[in-house]
Image 1 (cartoon, rainbow, N blue to C red):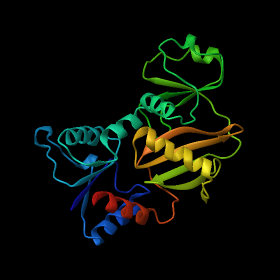
Image 2 (image 1 turned 60 degrees about the horizontal axis):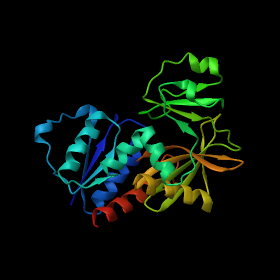
Image 3 (image 1 turned 135 degrees about the vertical axis):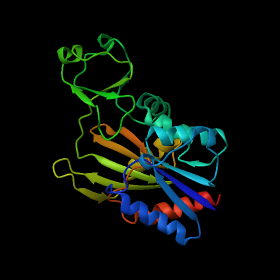
Length: 255
Protein backbone atom coordinates (compact mmCIF):
# COMPACT_ATOMS: atom_id res chain seq x y z
CA UNK A 1 0.00 0.00 0.00
CA UNK A 2 1.43 3.37 -1.03
CA UNK A 3 1.28 6.45 1.22
CA UNK A 4 2.53 9.76 -0.17
CA UNK A 5 3.27 12.88 1.91
CA UNK A 6 2.81 16.29 0.27
CA UNK A 7 5.25 18.57 2.10
CA UNK A 8 5.39 22.30 1.64
CA UNK A 9 8.72 23.42 3.07
CA UNK A 10 12.45 22.78 3.02
CA UNK A 11 13.55 19.53 4.61
CA UNK A 12 15.74 21.30 7.17
CA UNK A 13 12.79 22.62 9.20
CA UNK A 14 12.74 21.86 12.93
CA UNK A 15 10.11 19.14 12.66
CA UNK A 16 11.82 17.34 9.73
CA UNK A 17 13.39 14.70 12.02
CA UNK A 18 9.92 13.83 13.30
CA UNK A 19 8.66 13.43 9.73
CA UNK A 20 11.64 11.28 8.79
CA UNK A 21 10.92 9.03 11.77
CA UNK A 22 7.21 8.93 10.90
CA UNK A 23 7.91 7.82 7.33
CA UNK A 24 10.51 5.30 8.54
CA UNK A 25 7.93 3.84 10.94
CA UNK A 26 5.43 3.40 8.12
CA UNK A 27 8.04 1.71 5.94
CA UNK A 28 8.94 -0.63 8.79
CA UNK A 29 5.23 -1.51 9.05
CA UNK A 30 5.24 -2.57 5.39
CA UNK A 31 3.92 0.57 3.69
CA UNK A 32 5.46 2.08 0.57
CA UNK A 33 5.79 5.55 2.11
CA UNK A 34 7.29 8.47 0.21
CA UNK A 35 7.22 12.26 0.12
CA UNK A 36 8.06 15.32 -1.92
CA UNK A 37 8.56 19.02 -1.17
CA UNK A 38 6.61 21.62 -3.14
CA UNK A 39 9.68 23.72 -3.86
CA UNK A 40 11.51 20.84 -5.51
CA UNK A 41 8.61 19.31 -7.40
CA UNK A 42 7.18 19.93 -10.87
CA UNK A 43 3.57 18.98 -11.57
CA UNK A 44 1.84 18.93 -14.94
CA UNK A 45 -1.87 19.51 -14.16
CA UNK A 46 -2.88 17.46 -17.23
CA UNK A 47 -0.96 14.44 -15.99
CA UNK A 48 -2.06 14.32 -12.34
CA UNK A 49 -3.36 10.84 -11.59
CA UNK A 50 -4.15 8.96 -8.39
CA UNK A 51 -1.03 6.87 -7.84
CA UNK A 52 -1.12 6.38 -4.05
CA UNK A 53 -3.61 4.64 -1.82
CA UNK A 54 -3.46 7.52 0.66
CA UNK A 55 -2.14 11.06 0.36
CA UNK A 56 -1.12 13.04 3.44
CA UNK A 57 -1.56 16.79 2.98
CA UNK A 58 0.99 18.51 5.20
CA UNK A 59 1.36 21.67 3.20
CA UNK A 60 -0.16 25.09 2.68
CA UNK A 61 1.63 25.62 -0.63
CA UNK A 62 -0.37 26.59 -3.71
CA UNK A 63 1.16 23.68 -5.62
CA UNK A 64 0.06 20.94 -3.24
CA UNK A 65 -3.32 22.49 -2.46
CA UNK A 66 -4.19 22.63 -6.16
CA UNK A 67 -2.78 19.14 -6.70
CA UNK A 68 -4.88 17.89 -3.78
CA UNK A 69 -7.98 19.48 -5.35
CA UNK A 70 -7.32 17.63 -8.62
CA UNK A 71 -6.63 14.36 -6.81
CA UNK A 72 -9.80 14.73 -4.73
CA UNK A 73 -11.84 15.23 -7.92
CA UNK A 74 -10.40 11.92 -9.17
CA UNK A 75 -11.40 10.05 -6.02
CA UNK A 76 -8.10 10.02 -4.11
CA UNK A 77 -8.08 9.42 -0.36
CA UNK A 78 -6.47 12.41 1.31
CA UNK A 79 -5.71 12.93 5.01
CA UNK A 80 -6.78 15.53 6.01
CA UNK A 81 -9.38 15.78 3.23
CA UNK A 82 -9.00 18.61 0.72
CA UNK A 83 -12.33 20.31 1.66
CA UNK A 84 -11.47 20.17 5.38
CA UNK A 85 -7.96 21.51 4.78
CA UNK A 86 -9.05 24.38 2.53
CA UNK A 87 -11.83 25.43 4.91
CA UNK A 88 -9.36 25.40 7.81
CA UNK A 89 -6.83 27.45 5.84
CA UNK A 90 -9.39 30.16 5.08
CA UNK A 91 -9.94 31.93 8.41
CA UNK A 92 -13.36 33.32 7.49
CA UNK A 93 -14.70 29.91 6.50
CA UNK A 94 -13.12 28.31 9.55
CA UNK A 95 -14.71 30.86 11.90
CA UNK A 96 -18.12 30.13 10.40
CA UNK A 97 -17.71 26.36 10.66
CA UNK A 98 -16.39 26.54 14.22
CA UNK A 99 -19.22 28.83 15.34
CA UNK A 100 -21.78 26.49 13.74
CA UNK A 101 -20.15 23.63 15.66
CA UNK A 102 -20.62 25.50 18.97
CA UNK A 103 -16.87 25.97 19.40
CA UNK A 104 -16.04 29.00 21.59
CA UNK A 105 -14.20 31.50 19.36
CA UNK A 106 -13.63 35.28 19.61
CA UNK A 107 -16.43 37.51 18.35
CA UNK A 108 -15.68 38.03 14.67
CA UNK A 109 -16.60 40.34 11.81
CA UNK A 110 -16.01 40.43 8.07
CA UNK A 111 -16.65 43.88 6.63
CA UNK A 112 -15.47 46.28 3.95
CA UNK A 113 -16.61 49.17 6.14
CA UNK A 114 -14.91 49.06 9.54
CA UNK A 115 -17.30 51.70 10.91
CA UNK A 116 -19.95 49.00 11.38
CA UNK A 117 -17.70 47.11 13.82
CA UNK A 118 -18.70 47.64 17.48
CA UNK A 119 -16.62 49.98 19.62
CA UNK A 120 -14.87 47.20 21.47
CA UNK A 121 -11.09 47.45 21.48
CA UNK A 122 -8.51 46.16 21.09
CA UNK A 123 -9.06 44.03 18.00
CA UNK A 124 -7.00 41.64 15.92
CA UNK A 125 -7.11 41.86 12.14
CA UNK A 126 -6.09 38.64 10.41
CA UNK A 127 -5.59 37.89 6.73
CA UNK A 128 -8.17 35.40 5.49
CA UNK A 129 -5.36 33.10 4.39
CA UNK A 130 -2.39 33.05 6.70
CA UNK A 131 -0.45 30.98 9.20
CA UNK A 132 2.32 31.37 11.73
CA UNK A 133 1.02 34.78 12.80
CA UNK A 134 1.98 36.42 9.49
CA UNK A 135 0.01 39.56 8.67
CA UNK A 136 -1.86 39.80 11.97
CA UNK A 137 -2.30 43.34 13.28
CA UNK A 138 -3.53 44.58 16.65
CA UNK A 139 -5.73 47.67 16.64
CA UNK A 140 -6.03 49.61 19.88
CA UNK A 141 -8.53 52.36 19.02
CA UNK A 142 -10.88 53.73 16.35
CA UNK A 143 -8.27 56.15 14.99
CA UNK A 144 -5.87 53.32 14.32
CA UNK A 145 -8.66 51.24 12.77
CA UNK A 146 -9.61 54.10 10.42
CA UNK A 147 -6.06 54.18 9.06
CA UNK A 148 -6.08 50.55 7.89
CA UNK A 149 -6.82 49.94 4.18
CA UNK A 150 -10.18 48.21 3.79
CA UNK A 151 -9.91 44.68 2.45
CA UNK A 152 -12.65 42.07 2.28
CA UNK A 153 -9.96 39.43 2.77
CA UNK A 154 -9.68 40.36 6.46
CA UNK A 155 -11.16 38.69 9.50
CA UNK A 156 -11.61 41.06 12.44
CA UNK A 157 -11.77 39.51 15.91
CA UNK A 158 -11.86 40.75 19.45
CA UNK A 159 -8.55 40.43 21.27
CA UNK A 160 -8.84 37.77 23.95
CA UNK A 161 -7.25 38.41 27.34
CA UNK A 162 -6.16 35.08 28.83
CA UNK A 163 -5.57 34.27 32.49
CA UNK A 164 -2.73 31.86 31.69
CA UNK A 165 -0.23 31.11 28.92
CA UNK A 166 -1.46 29.90 25.54
CA UNK A 167 -2.17 26.21 25.15
CA UNK A 168 -1.53 24.22 22.02
CA UNK A 169 -3.73 21.15 21.74
CA UNK A 170 -2.51 18.63 19.19
CA UNK A 171 -5.04 16.06 18.01
CA UNK A 172 -4.46 12.69 16.33
CA UNK A 173 -7.81 11.01 15.73
CA UNK A 174 -9.48 11.09 19.13
CA UNK A 175 -6.29 11.58 21.16
CA UNK A 176 -5.47 15.07 22.46
CA UNK A 177 -2.01 16.17 23.59
CA UNK A 178 -1.40 19.40 25.50
CA UNK A 179 1.57 21.75 25.22
CA UNK A 180 1.92 25.03 27.10
CA UNK A 181 3.96 27.59 25.21
CA UNK A 182 5.63 30.18 27.43
CA UNK A 183 5.51 33.60 25.71
CA UNK A 184 8.82 34.95 27.01
CA UNK A 185 11.10 31.98 26.50
CA UNK A 186 9.12 30.16 23.79
CA UNK A 187 9.72 26.95 25.73
CA UNK A 188 7.15 24.18 25.40
CA UNK A 189 5.95 22.19 28.38
CA UNK A 190 3.81 19.07 28.23
CA UNK A 191 0.61 19.44 30.25
CA UNK A 192 -2.31 17.21 31.08
CA UNK A 193 -5.42 18.03 29.07
CA UNK A 194 -8.45 18.49 31.28
CA UNK A 195 -11.80 17.16 30.01
CA UNK A 196 -13.32 20.51 29.01
CA UNK A 197 -10.27 21.33 26.85
CA UNK A 198 -10.30 17.87 25.31
CA UNK A 199 -13.96 18.35 24.43
CA UNK A 200 -13.24 21.71 22.79
CA UNK A 201 -10.36 20.26 20.76
CA UNK A 202 -12.48 17.37 19.49
CA UNK A 203 -15.34 19.77 18.72
CA UNK A 204 -12.98 21.60 16.37
CA UNK A 205 -12.22 18.40 14.48
CA UNK A 206 -15.89 17.56 14.10
CA UNK A 207 -16.74 21.10 12.98
CA UNK A 208 -14.02 21.24 10.34
CA UNK A 209 -13.83 17.56 9.38
CA UNK A 210 -10.20 17.15 10.48
CA UNK A 211 -8.40 14.05 11.74
CA UNK A 212 -4.88 15.40 12.41
CA UNK A 213 -4.71 19.01 13.57
CA UNK A 214 -3.66 21.58 16.13
CA UNK A 215 -5.75 24.02 18.15
CA UNK A 216 -4.50 27.22 19.79
CA UNK A 217 -6.50 27.92 22.93
CA UNK A 218 -6.57 30.82 25.35
CA UNK A 219 -8.13 30.16 28.75
CA UNK A 220 -10.13 33.13 30.04
CA UNK A 221 -12.15 33.73 33.19
CA UNK A 222 -15.18 32.56 31.18
CA UNK A 223 -13.55 29.39 29.89
CA UNK A 224 -11.44 28.34 26.88
CA UNK A 225 -11.52 30.25 23.58
CA UNK A 226 -10.14 28.81 20.33
CA UNK A 227 -8.08 31.40 18.47
CA UNK A 228 -6.66 29.26 15.66
CA UNK A 229 -6.82 25.80 14.10
CA UNK A 230 -4.22 24.30 11.77
CA UNK A 231 -4.31 21.05 9.83
CA UNK A 232 -1.31 18.77 10.37
CA UNK A 233 0.88 21.07 12.52
CA UNK A 234 4.42 20.39 13.77
CA UNK A 235 3.43 18.43 16.92
CA UNK A 236 6.55 19.97 18.44
CA UNK A 237 6.91 18.94 22.07
CA UNK A 238 4.50 16.00 21.85
CA UNK A 239 6.10 12.88 23.27
CA UNK A 240 6.50 10.05 20.73
CA UNK A 241 4.73 12.15 18.08
CA UNK A 242 6.16 10.15 15.17
CA UNK A 243 4.97 6.86 16.66
CA UNK A 244 1.51 8.24 17.51
CA UNK A 245 1.13 9.60 13.97
CA UNK A 246 2.45 6.50 12.19
CA UNK A 247 0.14 4.23 14.19
CA UNK A 248 -2.88 6.39 13.35
CA UNK A 249 -1.99 6.86 9.68
CA UNK A 250 -1.29 3.15 9.26
CA UNK A 251 -4.66 2.24 10.76
CA UNK A 252 -6.41 4.92 8.69
CA UNK A 253 -4.80 3.66 5.48
CA UNK A 254 -6.01 0.12 6.20
CA UNK A 255 -9.66 1.12 6.73
